[in-house]
Length: 230
Image (cartoon, rainbow, N blue to C red; front, side, top):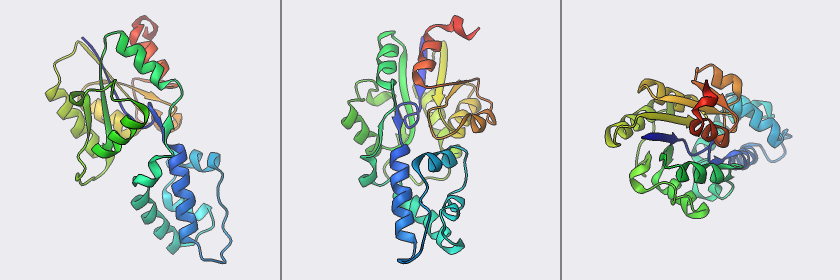
């Protein structure tokens, strides 16, 4: 049996608009009423996020002072995963078609995400994605889970998945962050990193995934046609 475990945000969902709206909100809430700031364009902001520039530095680049940058960073953490902003997420181009293709090929498909249950349910309902992932193929955080760091939490999800799922002859993980790569590597799972998410190629290369591909569609094609991996 061939199995594909995919991350959710990045390969399937584009979160860039949500993150940019939260950036705009936090900048506006943190600046003084008469203070001149420089709101970054979405392209500038997303490039900084993808190259892992810290939130405080993004705030400083936008014209906030040191104390404001600290406040901005805290407000951003409190806001980015709140319900009003999930409406700004969108489907990654080609993601649904790729999921259909791999499902029709009979590949065992699971999702592994740092979203909480309600956050995943929200997107499943909005985009009719539950048809690809039965409940016993969804690995996410409980609604009351106390997060530490993704790079520590995600390997725990992988351990749970590998314990609960039937053994597979071949398993691939697809993700867009260092946490996805770390979770796969820790448990001996092959991993493809996609460039369409929240990390750029330079950041992904630092984590040494088995492959780096453009997006989920490319990953699925490679998994279904393994001769292309040779």
